[in-house]
Image (cartoon, rainbow, N blue to C red; front, side, top):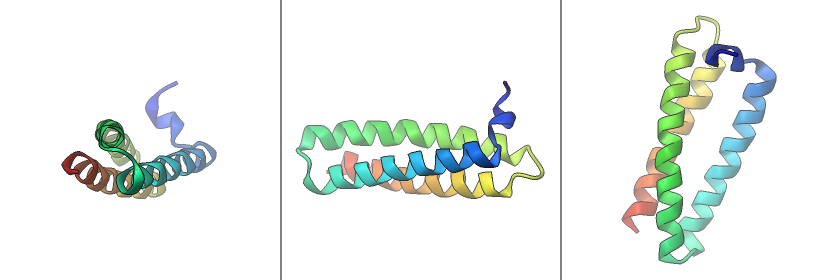
Length: 89
C-alpha cells in the first residue's frame, strides 16, 4: 500500500479525528500537567509535525486531494504551535 492510497475519504476522516484528539490532549497537558509531561507532549507534538509534513508532501503530489492538504496542513500548524508552547513551558 502506498502513502497516496491512504488518502481515501474514510481513512482521512479517521485520521482527522485522531489528530484532533491528540491536539486536545496536548493542549490539556499544556495547561494542567506537570512540567515533565509537557516536555513529553512537546516531543510528541514535534514528531507529529514531521508526520504531518510528510502527509502534506504526499497530498501535494495527488491532484485530487485538497481535503488531505487542508487536514495535514492545518494539523502541521497546530502541532508546531503546541510543540513550541509545550517545550517552552
